[in-house]
Image (cartoon, rainbow, N blue to C red; front, side, top):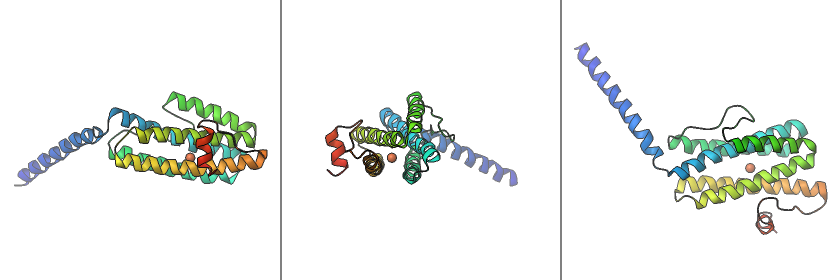
Length: 195
Ligand SMILES: [Fe+2]
């Protein structure tokens, strides 16, 4: 009797394992290769923002960096939930400043170097990151019809707009001049800044 129960349990275990193995690729296959690539990239791109702001906060102690790095962590978490949902491995390292994507690794190095030169350089690096994120998130939204992806990307874009406004106002306070667009068109930036 006990043997029979054990055998039944083993069969049930095998079935559960087979189900898990067959479900994971099906979920991942719910996204196109382009959508998967985009999601993986954006997870690390949000990490780039967070990691640069961590370094900038340590250097300058400006609260704008600590507030925004906390928001970038939330963005990273939102993208991670999508990666988990679709069974896609997380590319993000637990270590600060470590990236899988070689371009992001190089950008981290450059942006932190720029940010160490002056507080203005650090704020300009922040604004550059946010403009870049907005550009990439808009492309990601255009590149998918999935409502869950579009919703998360839309929220991230809104967050980046807030961050860009914060950095631009600090830059303008430091320079006494209007913020000049670095990545997007001036028209796009002015619209985000409400001008
Ligand atoms: Fe941001």
